[in-house]
Amino acid sequence: MNWPVILILSFPAFIMGALSLKGLTQNKELYLWMSLGTICIGYVFFYVHSHPFFHLFIIGFLWGIFNAVVQSLYYNSYITHNPKAAAGYAKIAKSMNPRFILILIGIATGTATGLVLGTISWIVKKLLYNL
Image (cartoon, rainbow, N blue to C red):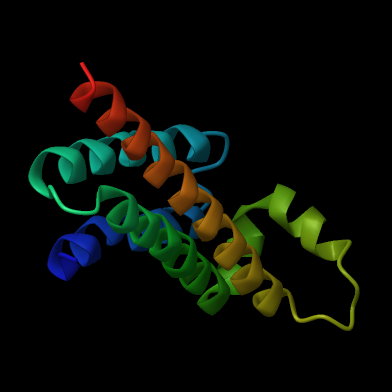
């Protein structure tokens, strides 16, 4: 495992988290994550030749964690600038801490993102090496 590459490619999650604090990623977040995912898949596929699935799974997982940590640390700013998120968290039971929910969502989202990134790299590797 190439941990320096994993950590460097995971860093954009902090930037995305910071941008979401001011509401700058509203209605664009999916496209921004897809662009970052494409860049990461390309980089890992061409420069890290061993275990691309595991590298990308960990990168995706860390994206979810890092993004959620930034949003939960600055929760008030996040809610102020993201009215859709504020409405969603208002529906959550009052007994649950919304910051904790953000972390749980980050873990689930990161796991799903990592699986998608890793699976795409696995499919591309199979297609290219079986030609």
